[in-house]
Length: 399
Image 1: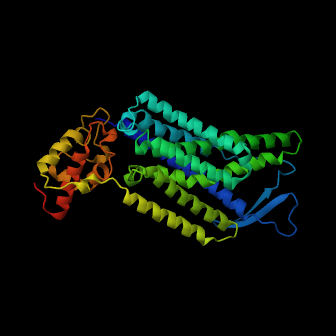
Image 2: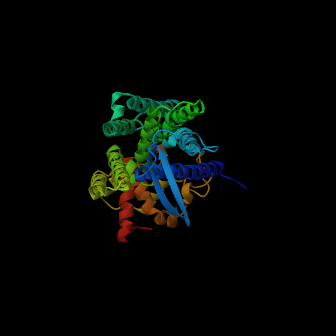
Image 3: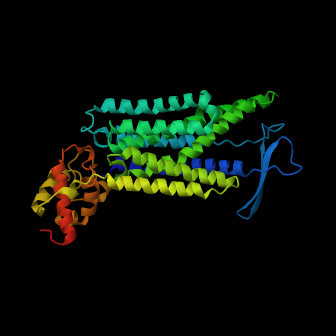
């Protein structure tokens, strides 16, 4: 019996990452929602920022927020931190498993830059650390007092980072590293700012002192930043299933556009929770999304559309045998695979025809297959594959 341990490990990590992420995002969204719904009612204690009554699951709840802190701490105080830590740790291992361990396939693009595996990993890790340091310095600078301006600058920095990484890494590798930078900043906000500030406030109360209100302000600011960065990160997490985003000549622009749409949607809900329904934000998000889709369609790499002349199945079979069959076979010969990736095999003519749309999407319209183009598939070969698939679609292919 043969077990593909790498695939099972990837499944466990991804499953754990999704579970931890749901817990983290859920608590983050809930507390921003709660903060936005707090109201000061007549007769409310002067030390309270507001309160909220809610009903859920058959029960009634009363939530209160103190302007700084209560007069004394309760015996039991709940913290929200491990969701963030476990999300980041599992996400880092998910990054390391394919993109660092398998850097030659998933991260390095020799057509852009002939990096060694060690150099590619060093750049990736340096980007993660450098991204957090730069963001943290922005927050601590005078700009940190202005959330709107800081958000715009940070967004532009990430767009510039996406453009730069796209010149170095594969499109998929560039996307995932921008997401990893954002995720690292979010988790580091919790680890280095939010939780330490909360611990300082608790320590001050235990010592009989009044906590510094600035501690809460800074922690809340970083929490709000995390709230806005969440939807772009989720988009990047799922983008590797959609090569029309990261394999495009202007992938960095597509990343920026779809991320901006997510930020606008998040802002709509944050304002709505405060009682302001700004439909214009949703309209703006839809316009940005539509323009991004049009850009992606207009700049899509489709060499197969330019091919002319009839292509025989024998020619296609030769191309697939030369570039694909070492992985996509019931018995792969590639050292990185014990089974055909995603269960897709090209051993027979029937299988090739069945998966022709996928071949077109990943090897013709995009150039993400073969992984890292390690076999050196040429633009002409991709064009011939595309031409044959077009013939098949018209019903005049050869057997």
